[in-house]
Length: 456
Image (cartoon, rainbow, N blue to C red; front, side):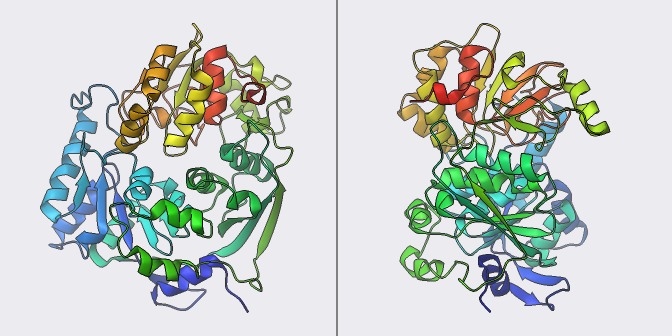
């Protein structure tokens, strides 16, 4: 019987253990940041251990970093976490993309941009959105702090192999509808747990026609579907993206092996979901979970359970309203889901020549300094600033409110991030997940509009 893409990569990394039992996997790349690494480094010190492979460990600063006046960190806890990572990286010989450096940024953007993320690798990070890297045909997943220490010490990790779920996406995306809408719709339709216990493989003509940046958007939110892993088969689009990047060594040698990374025709999946995007509409979340979302013209659903009731109360909304009825106050363009160059370019097309609505506070935060530098070369910063956006320094920013960028209590925010939990973007913040184009159009109009009528 043939093998799935996931099975092929998994099996090549098993050091010991029988299938069905926990197996010890070799880890090719370990990405770290300032929030989930301090205790792991301290564990090494307490046990008088060194990193097994410091050359396969890379650090960046992202969660706590200010996006204004970046070297003036006023929060004591944030400052301690940042300086602790800087000191640990030096002490243990870890390469760090430090504050203000050209390669610093959100961890799930730094990996692909530098060429560290490559097909066929196993990649871990102490962050739940590590599945992002699966867009390259890698097995990538988030881990906890104790697991971070385990990888530090052994360059391996015990894992139980999941089942396989194929998501076959077909049809041509309508104008004004994007990768973000695909994954939001899937979660809206199937819930935040349909991927639990599975490795998701996104396949089909629609996926094959997406750019790498769009593919990363989809895999980024696999965790919001309950899955640890989201993958896509690498192809020429993948290889062209990786080629020539600073850490993409031995490219011509690797590409032969990468071309073998696909699901065999006779491979069997444990479950298959089919989706035709031909009539897909822009998506907007109304509640406090990514599954609480609707297509743009669809009224918010009736209350079916206590979670719905709590979400409506928290969000200050009610059944029967529509996305255009939401009283927006903030717009956030950023996060590891949608702060790549193509996201900013798409948003700039809508912003150019317009002004941010007087009722809106709008900020744009490039996900990495690489993106910021390239965007500024293209003049995107001028477009945003002339429209009334704040143009910020790179970081996780308002995605999680672990830094000075937070949405005020009770204010509705159109956000290109990945989670709309209670308090995610600040105490009492009301988050609505959308594509960059939807967020940009909302900034100009002061409310959600059908972006399909804006994009030409």
